[in-house]
Image 1 (tube, rainbow, N blue to C red):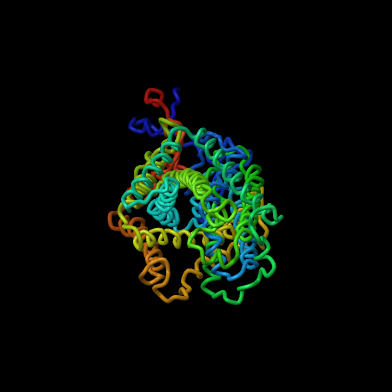
Image 2 (spheres, rainbow, N blue to C red):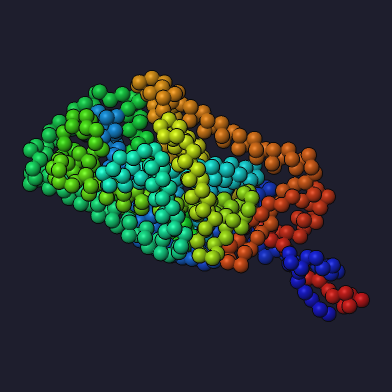
Length: 580
């Protein structure tokens, strides 16, 4: 008697089926949700997840090049962009006093640490899944089926551009050359800068991450030098006549702060810290990810916080409160001018440092975004699965990188400078904050779901107080932007109604919901089919889902032939001669 097994490629044969074996997947069912367990090579702990989620890649096709130092500098590169060089003056303007400014920076740290704790616990549940919020939303909200993967995928694809970072880099490159520019010259340099970043990240994963480490240490060194210079100023060893002018009455101006100014300042503070979860997008590329991240992620946040506070001390020791508020220069520019003099080349040195910082930020964001795009592609809700997930020939997620470049090119060239560009940049922030809020609440749901089916306790568990702070942080980020500017309804970043981007952002998510309803419910009912998931395995080791249309008359057979994840079950069959 001959026994054989058939797979997708062999399905065209017509063997006589003797019996079907059970699925290779271990399944825990609760209601109509099926949980599976899979082990990745990067962790000794299995990943238990809803079977509708993208399948675990047992061996990462992107390798395991993310070490403690890489994860540390991935976070630092995204946190430290150009904000710390420019935002201190606007934060001071919003809160009114130097003392409140320093307190706000510390509050920003506490809020960020609470969000980080949530990410650490979520990552500990899914240690072999990259993509951070793509995965966590998918698993926290399994119903309606494919709803959150679809909505988040569309949102993330639309807003995956990095045009604002590229434009900032271009502006400082022109400043470095001490040259004026037209709008199209600025756009041309921005495209060139982003193209260089594309080449850097696309050629080789390991070397691109080494470059991230180099830029991270340059940023740390830059902030450290400014911090040391500030302490030297406070010691009275420089040309600054009165370094204590802001510290004798640190609370001067607090009463002049408006509600809008204080709110705007806190939003800028939270934004300045954003990036401390950047490395979570690459979890499946980290050996022992939770052990690594529970040290590298908090350390990156604490290190940047200390440097941010010391840099602010340096700024406020070099110039008076009034000089900082009234100067047309950014805070860092005024600091360099006060310390070294107006004609000393300090401006050129500052532009060099900011260009390095902006380019490092550009690379770190591109790497993280590519992993999130790749993970949305692996969920099966986007067309052209191979484009999003394949990693050959260079061993990098080239499809997501090229897509980022194309959409960034479009967003640099298409919107004219001014209102339209600012509107597009603002538009991308509000939907992101909505999903961030849902993610914080999602941890509570994940805990409840896992408790119901008695899944193992996570390797890391956040304090309930931290979860509460994280929920309030993003609730605040949802409410705060609706508060009108003190200058009136048309006094925001654009000349028209300040809340336009908020309404349009919510409207886009509603349109995504309508698309989902038509795609998953209306069309299948009309044409007589249902969506089912199958598993695609590529020759480079990439694994993903693909959603297929199964006629209702074939559903019973399909469900019998496939397991919960979507693998084709292995069947034991007899040869026809043996059957005879």
